[in-house]
Length: 293
Image (cartoon, rainbow, N blue to C red; front, side, top):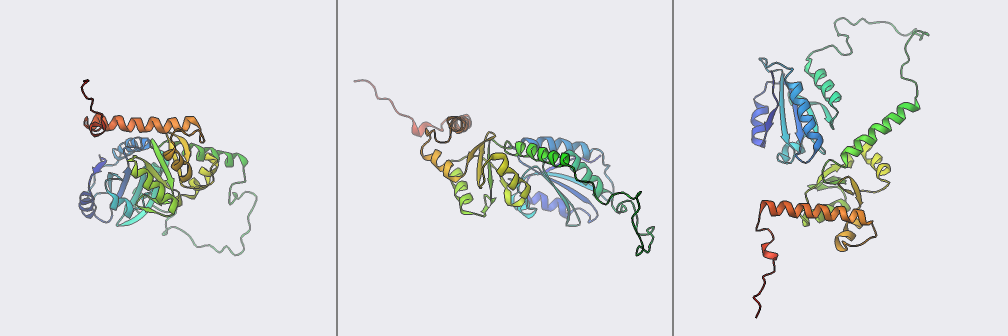
């Protein structure tokens, strides 16, 4: 059976991909340790891989990479959020699946692993040519499109709401921005990235220019019409103006005491992590007590 192989460096990726025959379907999973849905997706892919035998020549190749450790590879595949799955064959991208929808992932892999399968169940060899110039639909013909249903629209909104709920909690601090941290597409996003880096904040990000559904849906979901947006532990902090205000006036109640407490809690957690990793972390800032005279 096939297994999901972890690729840790760009060199490993280049060596692996160049060793595959052009007929091999590559299943490439991009993940990040801070995104909880990635663990679920890894489990899904490990289970799916076990259902595919190791053949000669190799029919499928299953690899997984930390998107933040192989930045050149991530950028080559336009990875803007995780988990992110890419299916390729012979250097051509066949399909991409963003998010942790196991059904979409399974269906995409099944579709492309069936090399040479007839499209829509009809092969070119058996398809007949018919003169349709005089064709007129009858009552027994199926509709060309499903009828409009307000219930379907509501279901789509619910699905989007669920996706956004997961996205804003994908990391303790999530930045929804125009572009990526390495290539911001607006001045406000660039300034907010600089502010987070200045304070050594670990954060996840989502490029809203790459997904218009998220871009428009998040405005309604957050009741906030502009970007960038900063979320801390699933709570909206706001755009650059509010983040800067909190940064300069951390005790301000203008944005709500609860949101300030969330920021303080996160900063304290970061400090505790630093101390655990380096007991000398705060020594340069400690006050040396002088002996009483």
